[in-house]
Figure 1 (tube, one colour):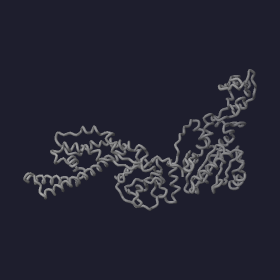
Figure 2 (cartoon, helix red, strand yellow; figure 1 turned 30 degrees about the vertical axis):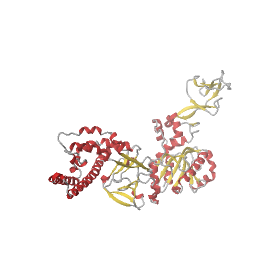
Figure 3 (cartoon, helix red, strand yellow; figure 1 turned 60 degrees about the vertical axis):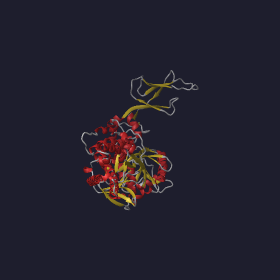
Length: 587
């Protein structure tokens, strides 16, 4: 579909505990051993009675057998070994090797569970580790530096201190100084971390998966989940904590971990595991959780007056007034009602100034008589240009409806006409963000699922595209482009954008619909006259002039070229009316 921007990764991991603790065990064993004969490394060093009682009993039996062997050996003249004693010695050596191997295995597992306890993971791994699978030795994480996290957990666990508490005791010997070795450097070379894949979808609802797998039950202590992960990762079926935990497998392949109604997936792209009837919900989950969203920076802060303006535009008579805006900026020849005056400034405009072709100046209408308003100085005048650097000076006239325009010593008197310009912060907001916020309020009131300002990268051609809103209903996904004023050229441009999107998402485009919506409309929309007339038959209150609204409200559709889909075009300034349209369309 789109290029994945997922930050979730699957790692395999192993901790070489024997290499970490082996040198300490050998050192402690040397101190604890009375002579070389009973210097048995881990068997001498560790008291297994509190770690693994069956092993502790085997060690005790071994020690008794060894003592008896030594006693029998000493009773022989010159310690000569008989055939029977040789066999007993070989058997004891084999038992000792087996106990050492078993001892390191059990001690490593003991320390593994101590180090990766829920307390340690919650304290040092939260927000970075999503899932830790202790059975299969997998980690799902949001962080690339997983080695640093594991090292931190090991270091904070004070492994050497734990080792010392497990040792057999001997008077006058204190091993506490060994704890000074317990730091990051001790562990760095004894951790194996391998990134296996980037996960498109780290977790999914169990109901979405095809039932072509086996489930093997495991204990709740065999995994660790960062529970707060589900506060930011949205699932259709809310995660319900459960003690029913299973490993999911297909043949010999481990697919993931099932906990209650959800599954953590170890597949990089699990699309082949998803039931066809849940594909739409699956893709929506990826969109909702920003798996496809390209990183970008947005400033959504608004001033107090902009927030007030946002509330007022829900009023029908205010939207009627705003439909009279020229250039989405000013109103002329209409008196602004008192309750809306705070959003406008009385101004006048000047255009067609020499050396400023293509620019309009907006200046305050009321100011001190015969005072200067603005001066314009050309700082990078080219040698070929003959005009003065001081290009213009504009001043008030003694009559309030006139100005002086200086481009030389003698001014020209010009008339000025009052217009009502949106205040600066509102004027920029109105052009760039107003209609998006207006539309979002409608979606919130209708309780529709949506994402906004969603920028993606296409797999097919490395292009990028941004969509103002993507709306999800039970059966459809609606891709919406918003314009403050709907124009012919904007419709044509969006049609091309839709064609590229359809090509990118095929063959999954059947459940997609496309809308372009404006608050106001331009006269050049009449280019689509045939479809406008067809739309008038379906929507009698649209595609014709409406009282109190300066621009024409539209609602029509036309086929998107080279596809089976249509593009629906809407222009509606009224909050309540547009809300009704969206409620009717998005079902």
